[in-house]
Image (cartoon, rainbow, N blue to C red; front, side):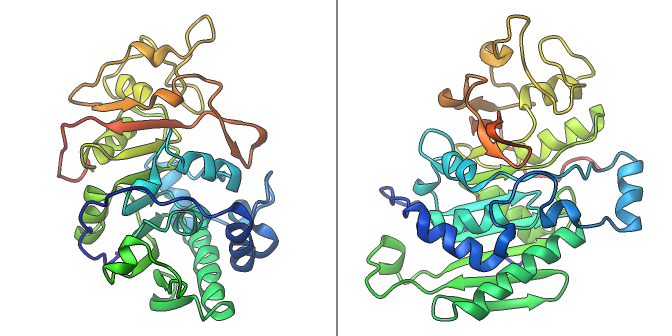
Length: 320
């Protein structure tokens, strides 16, 4: 599905984010007017599902609801208080859509040597595939095409500026971004290895409202390593309750799953890590007011859920 080199070793120190203007300019080069677009008119929203994908949704195996984290939201998520991406060397995005988040993370965080993104919907993947190819064509002095299987996978690398003296360049390491089409619950061995060693994970998957789907989502995230940071569209506390067949604190049947008490305050404050859900919410994310700009909420933002994996790793694939 997505060939991936072995995860690099630990990194020391943190690398500063580039200013937003150069990053946004590269995103615009890749995606044109679609970069930063919000509402329901993005290329990802307009990408039609295949008949096979429609059947998957009807069978409640997948939910193809679509939305995008906007550049300002991604920039906030990557920061030290949330995903602390500038201290990591590898990032995996599950439910990558058209690949905008993966590309922005690659550009924002020079410390990331490997960014791997997987999207299930073929038409959305093709939008991202075209964007990365366009980037290599228009800025060849910076970006190179390493591998391309049309309609399946594209992998690019970035050539650092001559003045770049960052640690990974001193070590002679290359930086690579790969986008592929595939089912996040049926990852191949290389993709599972990438997820297992990722320092940062974006889990932008809207799960069907079933206990089985909730259990599969948690099982997939448990395969990440202790200490990894995760941003999830779904509240993992709610997934845990739904997977167990009940709802005592959260509201798992809401769309999306939320954790809000009767007083309007986040009800997940009392959650303690468990074998099923070993994730600890990041302190900065405790308040429901901690929101991130999204295509459906560009001004008020959406309360994505940020966690640190506290332990209890499971290496097998989630249940089929």
